[in-house]
Image (tube, rainbow, N blue to C red):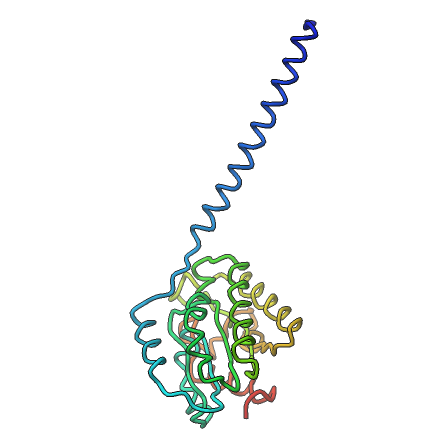
Length: 242
């Protein structure tokens, strides 16, 4: 069926407008989905325990040449001053903490201009299914803040430890090996590029099945006494602590 020239022009114009409308609807839908996805990221960090610890940290006196271990429960559990037989070593781990929580309390950590900071954080972010890109973005903010606010502080970025899904506790933290390895690799790359010391603890805590070795854990996530002694041994061997 042949259309009159004027009708054909109208038809072409209508088709073009329709295609553009469909395109813009599609783009708008994608943007909406992206925004919704970002809105679903859990950025919370505040808990009763977090507030208890941070308010105490802020009241404790600063001392010279502090060596700070910063992180979540894996750091929190460690009796670091006794492990190192050094009163200058301070524990700034908070059970349940994540990269958002460390960012929020970093000013207290840096208030003493510590000589060294050993940081391990991220497994709780991963357990919440926070995108790797956001975890890395937060981590970079933490590291840049340390460098800007306390340039003399030596930074040691410690890899996230493996987990072991043979244990029934902490199911949200299990089966996230792909994310743990991805975050560790990205952290190592960033550290190399920015002349920050990266400490690979992950490899030394693996068993033959590439899981957190039962020798070092009793719940598949946290480490036991032997685990902390292994941690200490690695830092000594690398010359980062004495």
